[in-house]
Image (cartoon, rainbow, N blue to C red; front, side, top):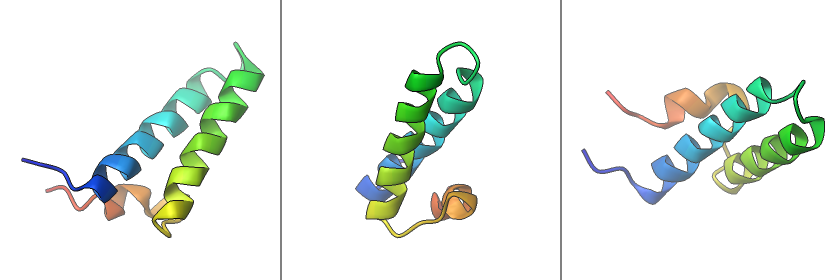
Length: 59
């Protein structure tokens, strides 16, 4: 299955969010930066964080 550019960007945002959550205690600055990168990617595609998984449209 090939992903669209939009789906790839959203998938990257989801991964960055997951990374951010797991590294919050270990490196708060890195965690904050990952969260911001995720938010920027979602904003580019007009997707709210809670909608990100559904926006991937992967079955």
